Length: 578
Image (cartoon, rainbow, N blue to C red):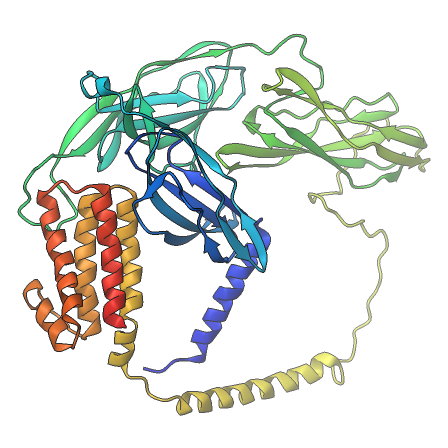
């Protein structure tokens, strides 16, 4: 096996790509808790998330008044949404409060390019267990439809969350019946916080998860009812036996839960509605105005582009009316561009309109376009500030263009370059003796030299022992595979976690000793470890992890048990490699 120069080139490009991503996006470092309120003795997760940077010297807070149930686990991910790349490194830990009251988790710190970043402290309210919650008839599983507001105006965005509450674990969620959302324009939000959290309801602590989020836009005023949604969930059977501990499916029972009906009150827009209202409804909008030719004659047409952009449903936005004096003739605008996207769970969009304006008389004119949108937070119409447009009009040959619509010469969307009004004849140049001529001779010679050097480099590379290389990489491979186990652990999917962890451990031995096919089984794992000279203590710990995974299907393992087993598996691989 030989390393090629292309390998180094790919690594270089990946590093360059990562640095470029981080340079484009702002660096943030924040602390996130899966619970704002927790019952004394119950656990929850705290994460410290660094976005769009490579950090080092991470320092966690002291976690006083909390019992730390796990070590600090780190994970990395990158994502691309609407052409924007984002990277994040997350440091997570499981905690259990040891006293009641409002407890504070102090700031964590990390260094990025010699600059120190700190998270803000977060507070968690800890309450004592309610004995009555153990005997009440409150259900163990239920579904809520949670709107961001119960009162809106036509065109206002309402986020609707499908939020599931459950004790223990749930393997699968399947929506079997939901509304068509009559009276709304509905759009499914692709990016939202869907991680498992903890929440106390009537003295009982639940795991919660948002499984779907919609953006709803009321189309008319009045009371609109959102019907109940039905959800089928797969719940692990308590104490059920399983013939094979190595499977991705554990015995489950199906349950159907239904949400309550939700009513939304849609109020009409307040009167009077300004004549400059564009139909836009949202917390913020802005306008951009571009004039192709500020200087023109009475024989010319002035081309103006108006772009309205902001949050909400851009389908409702209409072309603003350009109110000018009789000095100008304004033709009906054309829609030339429309775009929409999603940012942090909110829909944003823009529309660009093209206006053709004919000046009738020479002179200097200042135009101040005025556009209005409705702000539902302030419950009022607000004007969009714009710059003053100055037009300098001179007398043309025909003096006026009254009632004559021009032939449009401007076809491109701005920014535009001025149109050329004269023709220049370009004489052909002599090719021999030019820079292009010499480059045509030099480049093939340079390419031949590079190819010759590259061939010598490849021939002089030493042979690499494939088996030895595979053994050295065994630890890295195991850690990469353990990342899947970590994801299953974080999701609370303990059965799949134990299955995956057992396979990773066996696969590690397989890679380390270059065992192929069916030569490796659970019965001879210990033998191979012994023959390799591994310490007896390490072998016993390794085998104990396999036996624990095997028994996990028959026993009710807690989140703390699974977390500890994950930590033990990581450490025993490191110890064997050392």
